[in-house]
Length: 72
Image 1 (cartoon, rainbow, N blue to C red):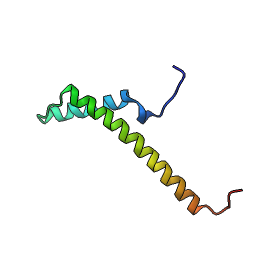
Image 2 (image 1 turned 180 degrees about the vertical axis):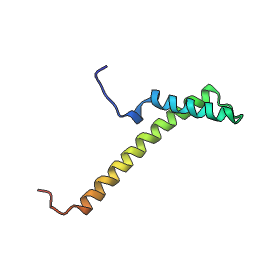
Image 3 (image 1 turned 180 degrees about the horizontal axis):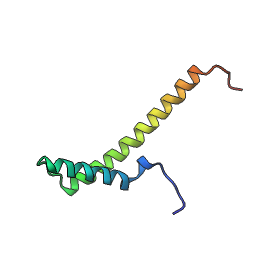
């Protein structure tokens, strides 16, 4: 395993988050089946990647607008 990825691109991480969320909801009487968990994991992973790309793009634009020196 030589390739790397960001933590928010990991389905294992999001699977753990969704499982913890499901456990907490279970305390309140809400049950989430395995198929729904898989959908949540896939959608959350995609959303997190898109959100990170958006934030990164916005920060790059903001940084260039606020920059005090020209780019050569």
